[in-house]
Amino acid sequence: MKNITNTRQSAEQNAEIEKAGARANERLAYTPAEFAAMFGKSKTWTYRLLYAGQIRRIKGAPSVLIPHSELLHFVGQTTRHE
Image 1 (cartoon, rainbow, N blue to C red):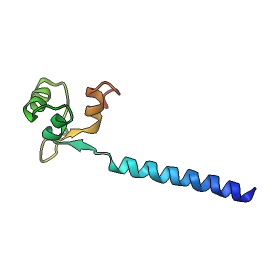
Image 2: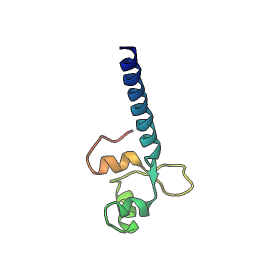
Image 3: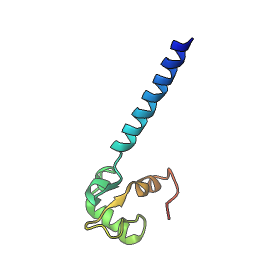
C-alpha cells in the first residue's frame, strides 16, 4: 500500500514539474512581426491594430512588445488585464 502511495505522489510531482516547464516555455510577449505571423499577416497589420487601440503594447519597453494576454484577448479567449 505504501508503494502505491509513493507512486501516486511521484506521478503528481512529475505532472507539476511538466506544467511548470510548459509555463516557462510560453512567450510572455511578442514583437509586431511575431504577432502578425501567428495570423498570417504582415507586421504593418499589427501596427495598425496598435494605433487603432485594438491591441496594447508593453509601455516602457525599449522596443514594441505585445503581451501574451493581448494575443489571448484578441482571439477572444480571455478578458484584457487592466
